[in-house]
Image 1 (cartoon, rainbow, N blue to C red):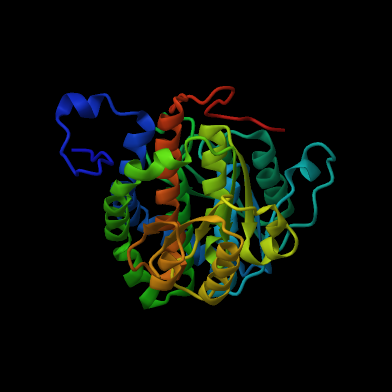
Image 2: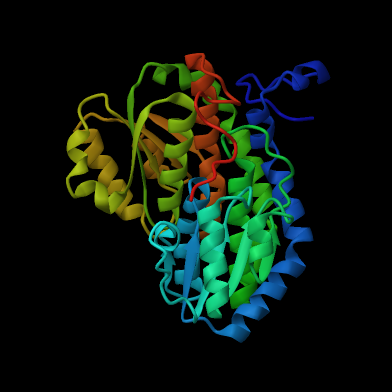
Length: 363
């Protein structure tokens, strides 16, 4: 039975489950999707990893839009840190509007898209493949244009995603990237940590059950900032995107370092700031930022598994003890749940936000 985020932890009957929002169901499906992907996608991950080693790319180039672009930001950190590869995010307009593709002949070029349909992402992959690059697509549709355009395809196996706001396909993208890197570098500790990932996500969902009890506090906010750093730079962007899409709120997303270079001036007493601060290398800097935010009397919401970070929060949101490199896959879930219940509190449509469509085809 699909769990609902009830603070009293009551179990829903079948009729109640059928009345759930598609978004709510899809958030809850993420641990099981991760389990399936880890099992069914392992052969693909190993095959693609061998192809990458044989090709020996000089750099990695990632084409994506929207939520998938945030998955690309995760790949920048994970591939850079574990595989020591320079990773850049592509500028698809250079290929489409300007028709001047850069030289990608010695690159691993990755296209990430839930639908696999955007023209500009497909164009980056097709241009790169024509130049002799090694090309890879990550999509939730193995019959899509993007899957056909690339040398290799990694199927996300997330099942149909009905809600316009992407949730399970995003964490599937991050999981696929984690699997590829673990296979590429061959470190046993990475492979062992991946095995525990579904359990971390199950625990995260359980910890999220408190969110509906306090989300009403933020019903009338109209400005918001989300801060992350390192591996969770992507999480700040993705949570920001979910709140923008669902709640029609002006949200700014920043690296903790960038936020100090001027934007911190937006923080006035009561200004809500969500800080994604799981245990890891950025924690000293994030704790220092939280101290400065509290000096400014900001309203700090903190997603963390680190005791001092949680103590610095007006609204603490707990995470399990997940390794830093996998933490973005777990840390985004409280943001998804927050956006879901804030949307409900505001009375906005959950599964079909006004003015948005599930597939956005850009050129």
